[in-house]
Image (cartoon, rainbow, N blue to C red; front, side, top):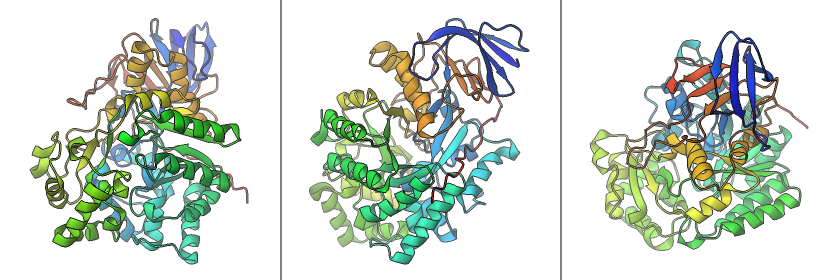
Length: 526
């Protein structure tokens, strides 16, 4: 054995009872479980739990992994795999025009990217870039990728609010198929973001048929988490079933005053579909505020034509007044059909340091929001304080739940979920509240996500599986990040391994870059 971890409480990711054992690692894989002797190196794990590495099912580290070899925001949480390409917008597949537009549109999520060499245009090229990052050493944690439907639509027909022609739909099908064949695990959508929101249900169904043929899954940020949320969930369930496609509901929650206490209605909808044979999972983060970009709140029509067109409308007094009415009176589709309450909107980050004094402040009205959007060129990120704790707790206990941080790493004051989601589950909801057992929680954070991704050798502590492992103290593990100090690393997670190599050791980040692109082997059933 290269390494023997002695006397750990093994929480194996299946949800079954934990047990005490030694775990041996050899050549990057788990080589033995039981009472083991030998080992070139040993770790005393008495008092610690040993679990499979956690899978962040909803991550926004698309550029962060290329930018920051350390990436302790995730590595220190015990995350060994992130799923990128979320919410229908990311950086592949693109041409030169689309890349520039997408960079501007999601600068609030990932930064403008001026420090990144965008030397890829395809999904396969992006995955190769991850493998070759940082001088060929790789990246901090493993990464899988979803083909972003909004980016595909922008590539095929631009940012227009209109139905796709037959030729454009064919082109989108080909782009999705190519991305899946190159290793993507599925398709994402952002149906409150442009241009993805302009797609009809029929268009999305056709793309999901392609996903189904390749054995992937559809991951929508659906059309509303506020007014009409249940109808939006029902649309996604029906759409995926019609396409014969597995469905994974992104950051599944019920927000705004209209939905307080209504999580059981959502869960009943999902249970009925599951009992009828649907293949559904979901992810959530264990916090009540949401996090997005300020421009995302604007109505879809105001975003038509792409970022430069949005800025032009904001400069025009008549158009700006029309946007204000949509936000404050009518209920913008970008704000989930609910009239915006500016007191719930907190600025979490800006790209231009000149606007940084606004970080941490709640907005006092439309004119301040407009100045920020224009001055910071659509880049401000926000926390939106519209969630409900009882909904969060009900959803995390569901039988198909998985963990996803939805962590935006940009901004001076990001959401604490970016640095704290996984230890917060273990510390707050397992140890302090007893809402989940330790064994159940690890299944939610490791075993079940790996099964959704159809990864045959990850997500469990089992002989032959990859040695992506996390050692933590169940009595002390906790998120260090708070709303006031969001970049503080967690406590109680001394060791994290990827492919049997320590990326965290004794609570400190090593210089190991063991992360690689995790590609799904295409399964084309045509």
